[in-house]
View 1 (cartoon, helix red, strand yellow):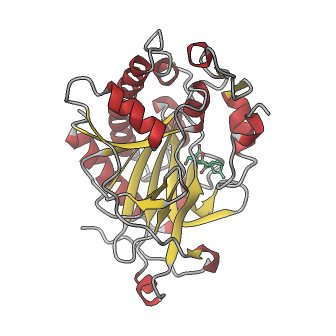
View 2 (tube, rainbow, N blue to C red):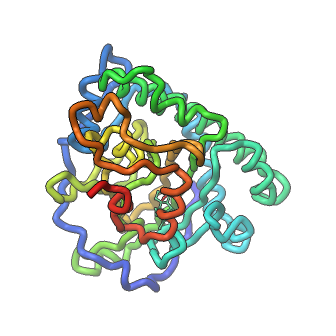
Length: 329
Ligand code: GA4
């Protein structure tokens, strides 16, 4: 097994008290192999904006292959990884998240989901042989995107939206502005001496896109905020996927689904490696509540393009409520 290196603590501001958190059995689990999960999916998006998916149909070999490529990448010396950075917004980054001063105990690689673009931009990775890595990304992303679209179609059915590809077509579009992220959270044994304090791996935030599909190795750290503001720890499960409702889906459902606030705290003993597909619309796509979900109600949001939302997101801090600017008063 490759042992990933452990940087020294330089960012005292990352030390927080993220208690109380308990592992929760409340988190909805959706079995995609069972008939008709629509109603449970809709309920999970309304109540939590978050759920776990089992029997997802994503081939295990795509998952293990990408995880081993990710570990190989993060095990490279810093100067090698830095050849693909700084993230602007794509590329390798270490501790600095986004352009506005957010930091976390994390190193990461941000890619697009466009195979050709990644090949051009990241051809310097792994010396002269980026093919294995990029191929693993591509196999994984294609399978996860298919599952995300299946979930979005079940959700559209559950909400009686026609056509049923109203959400999924945005991810399927050739111009879809989707992102893929690999995160490595190094362990921090010193945390055990710090009186139960926590080190922030990735600060609290909601995802701006439509839907995010996350998986990690078997290391704890992910926490989600419930609607009453209470934080709960999500028990790790390397064989399942965790789905987040993003801000854009909150808008398209006129607030019926809630984008979930989440964060990652560092594990004291184990490296956490996670991979997240963020399914987003094309840049020119107009995002607004779907007419069938507004009938008889008021539209809660102004219409905006995904380009406008993204531009304003990159001016914000991680923890900001980015939808505030687009709410109708
Ligand atoms: C959060 C979700 C995705 O990881 C991400 C992040 C992006 C970044 O890391 O560059 C952002 C963050 C995320 C939201 C606000 C802005 C942009 C950092 C940041 C401070 C890739 C994304 O799309 O939005």
